[in-house]
Length: 204
Ligand SMILES: [Fe+2]
Ligand SMILES: [Fe+2]
Image (cartoon, rainbow, N blue to C red; front, side, top):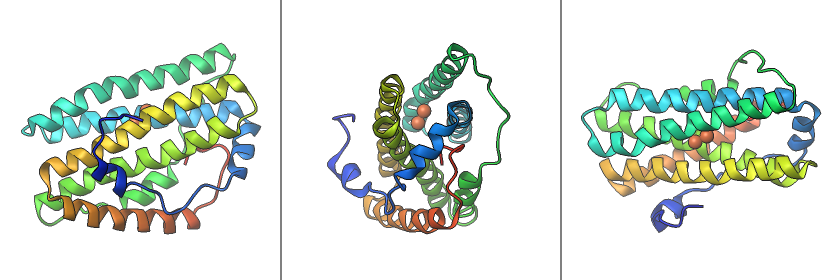
């Protein structure tokens, strides 16, 4: 994990619900399916960062921080694509993203600009946090040592990203407000995770 992240950011992270360890066994059934879903996750992360850069073009700190993340996420997509190719596997079709769609329902879309910006950033932080946790599970639970290392790198990278989104929120919004809303996000996410089907062909 990036050593430069603030203690504050570190202390407010923390998912309420750990993934059932058996999920890795489901994921392992089809490496092609899990890599395919992973590839689309990375693609969507890059696209979402581009959208934020476009939408908040008058916030230089945000633009500066997210511009390199676009490149990084796209690099992740290419890494997963290369892994599929190396294994003689195909990038399958994009699946319905139940997890992200459920998170989107929690994003504030009306009201003051500050609240909307906060939720845009925490929505991203939430996906990064859960992705990081899932990659950790894969890095610890997959039988293939190569894939363990492969997923450890992703885990570290996404850990840095979720901290970055929290820190960006703290750049524009009062830290107590960020902390309070992040707790609500964690609460919502854990309840939602409990209600959706656990699938081996999905990162989330
Ligand atoms: Fe990524
Ligand atoms: Fe990321």
